[in-house]
Structures are given as structure tokens and as C-alpha cells.
Image (cartoon, rainbow, N blue to C red; front, side, top):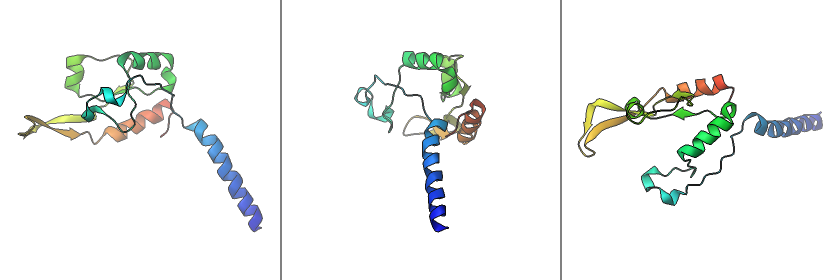
Length: 130
């Protein structure tokens, strides 16, 4: 009886490890930008960066496999412009116009608390998972 339980557990674990990569995957993207080309404050832990042209090529080549989110503030989008190729605009941060930061000489930035909620809703709508 115990051997059967162990075998069933191992088979289940193996099945999950074989299926999981199929269920949840990311599009493989080759980057041409190295972190050394960026100022330190713009570098990310993942060390993955895209040019605007690379982003366009990926989004147009594989639209059903990519969730393209613009995380800029509404002001940045209005000033710089945007692309209709984005799935959504979800600002990651915004300015708190009630709080002035003397040291930075600008309004305080606050993180958008709705970002993870809206992001997860978009993942589900597009058929993706984390």
C-alpha cells in the first residue's frame, strides 16, 4: 500500500514537472543592450532590456503570446506619446501632488496599489498565468 502511494506521488510530481513548462512560459527574447550601457539606477535585476524596435518586432510577431503593458504615468504618455499596440496602460507610480520632496525638488512618487490587481486581471483575460 505504501509503495503504491509513493509511486503515485512520484508519478504525479513527474507529470506536473513535465506539464508546468507548457502551461506557463515566457517568450524567449534576446537582448542587445547590456546593463553596462545604462546608468546604474536604470539597471534591473533581470538584466533584460529591449529597444523600442525590438519591442515592436516582438509584439507584432507574437501578439497572442505577449502582454504589453505601458507602466508610465498619464503625464508621460501624454507628453511622449503611446502606441495602440499596448494591451493596457497601468501606471506603476504616480505623483502625489500634495507632497513636495525638497531633496529631489519634485512631487513625491507613490506606487499604484492597484497595479498588481489590474495586472493579474489582464493575465487572466489574455489566458496567461504567473
